[in-house]
Image 1 (cartoon, one colour):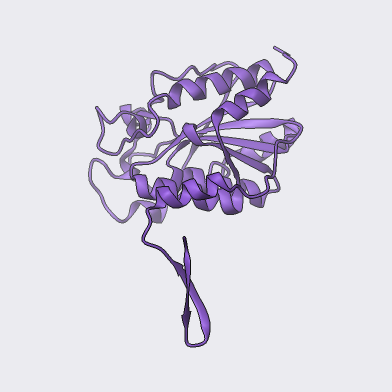
Image 2: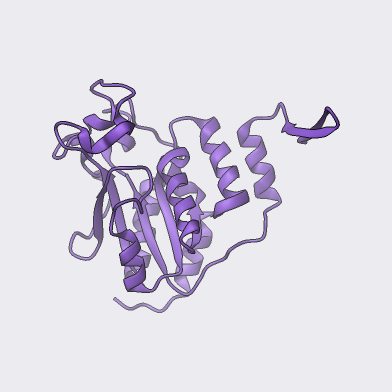
Length: 235
């Protein structure tokens, strides 16, 4: 249990010796009321590029659920079948790295963020992804949120969506940033647990917990599949 600590007559922060995963599983077992699914959704697959999905090639990559890409492909197919938009984002920067801004100033190694260059293998989408390059929308983003200085908001308005489903990574970085901004823009926000990943277990589960408490419905991908199966096909 989380324990409130009394300090100088006031309640201090909650303290616990349990892991972030244990705390998340407790929240999962006792879920908050949901925002729920709306009438129309957009699928935003965030930064599923080799620099983050191929641990065999890059030290910056990670894997949480080995079936993540399979689930994302199935979600994407379901959204297309419903006639709903599918978006893929990736990060890449110019040779100077100046379009990475202050975010790229903490380090400058071959593995640094600003050194994900346009046209490089690090910027390429994972080969296991099934991207329809005629129908799907692809955005290059520069900052954590998929909304920041991309055309995602305009796309949401054009399609009259009220729900954003997020997949990709990292859970603690670009997924969290995109979820917070999605909620801030008035969208019901869904995060299928098996479809997001992070390099570190602790921050992955800590952010899933925080997202579930505050910003999004963190649910099983099976529940999203079941929802999609109720929709009429329009493709």
